[in-house]
Length: 381
Image (cartoon, rainbow, N blue to C red):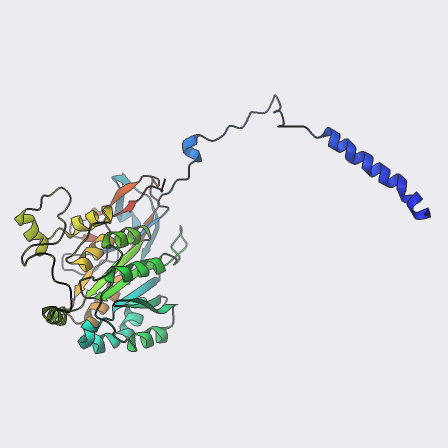
């Protein structure tokens, strides 16, 4: 009882203070001081979330007239435009940043005869493609798409995975497998300013056809371009595939012999001359790649491996004639570690639609290869 009497005055004091503070609290919004400007709400167009490209990171291959790679150029020698607007290079590396590569390997029963050669190629993937500081992952595909090895810097893990490859069904979900590879690469770190990142590379070893994929090639290319993924392809010989096709193991062609199933390049009519060019060496693969990216629901039936490389700045290597699988992989590795890595932040990051990239040099004796552009889709309503 004595204790309560001691603390009663203190409690009354605290209670009185609380009531006083409560009485002083303003009701409703606080009126601005006369000498302070009123903060306005942002304009409606600024309040909207803008979806655009924050970084374009791309490998640039430069060769002289004899085909040898050129290594002595500097950032000031390059002029890059994005939809005609000149861009400032934010990152430049000669020889390239470390590589993150997803190796897609066809594992259908159609390539049984090629399997021994493919199994021996594991050491080439690790030594010439990944390099000393690279990392790799392995994906196999037939009727299913299987992640056989996640990203690792262990050469033994990659080589063992490739050495133990097994074939399965006769299906060939090429585009679905490519979509998986692009998604895996999208999480790998990219360069920021002077901070090095990783080049994202998708290396595909497959026949040049697709059966049963839910994904379209244009969708794969659009995502690859936005994720700064470069696609290299090794075309496996179709001799065995043609043998199976004659026996009815694959779908029949959708057009009669001699008639192209490729979409014509934008702005051209499907005349016999245009279709003939699309089937021969004069095919406008760049136009087809741009068409596919802008019309992702359209289908590219012929030469998809070449279209994929043209659309992302990579290269296609055929193994049908005098080039072996080992030689093709070795050439890809040699190019990857002798090219330039160039990055820029687009001036118009919220401009939707197709962005055309041009990389130019003042020297006419040099040939430049880089990806042709990318497509920015508007945000969903």
